Amino acid sequence: MVRVLLNAPKQVRLGQVFDIKLLISHPMEPGQRRDAMGQKIPRDIINTLRCTFNDRLVMQADLFPAIAANPYFAFTAQVAESGILAVEFTDDHGVTQREQMRIEVL
Amino acid sequence: MNALLIALVLLATPVHAADLHSGYADESKAIQAMQDDDDANPAQLWVLQGEQAWDDAPAPGVKSCMECHGKIASMKGVAARYPVWDAARNRAITLPDRVNLCRTEKQGLPALGRERETMLGLTAAIGKQSLGLPISVATSGPLAEIGAQGQAVFFQRQGQLDLSCADCHNDLAGRSLGGATIPQGHPNGYPLYRLEWQQLGSLQRRIRNCLTGMRADTYRDDSPEMQALEVYLAQRANGLKIETPAVRP
Image: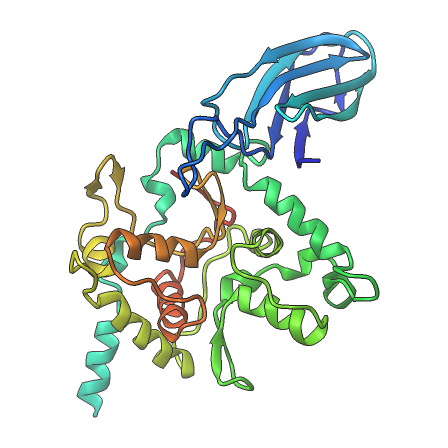
């Protein structure tokens, strides 16, 4: 489990476009570097990021090396009903982590 | 004797007292924005961990920080007045020292290294409670002497490049070193997130970083030179606002 900061308004007006900000604590090891012994450090990045609202896809991204550690994502969305905003990401170890919060439409 | 005192007081005055400013002012707008927005500042990941570490018992049957001190908000102003003089131990103690003293004496736990995640988290979370408060470290009493020792270290030329801290951070502050602007070198944002480190780091780490760049021997965290330098840097930055946790390139 890595530390995740998911930030979006808890309440929005109908039709309001709002920001979703996501900060993930992750080394994002690019796979090109070598350690002190000259051995390649295996690639370890978050390779897929999905954001859903009530299980409907909002945003999906395929990620590649050369993204700095502790990546930050910001995007916008608009929802028509109250529900659960969830982000899911998978790293090169195949571990998937999910973070979610509830958004109320006023 | 009086003349000597006056000379000492003059020496202790920062060279750039009129133009005291945080490294924040030397950064690009992008980095300033990253620091200012809690949602984008990666150091927040450590702050949250530190707030959790404050509330939780560190081991079964051991009192948490909160059980003695109350909510972490009670730490407001603490980071602004450290390092302080500890009369009982007859030495200056920094904020990480204070955390370790609580751990070893009150909680019966081993001391933590400066760069351990828990230490960085706790000092970042405690420091953040003083966000915006001016640094106000004592410059009289026993700390005056320690500060003077630290000042001597600050002005001491050392390493293969024969540089002192003052050469860059007093005389050349605001000029360029490679692509970066040389800051005045104030400790008002530590522990801070350095993009080059891609993680949070302590003031001690930053100082070691500089010393390595000067091709000088580094000081150990608990060496008298490091302690004195930390006291001097804080006294030199008196009046600057705390920015913990800051972001730097």
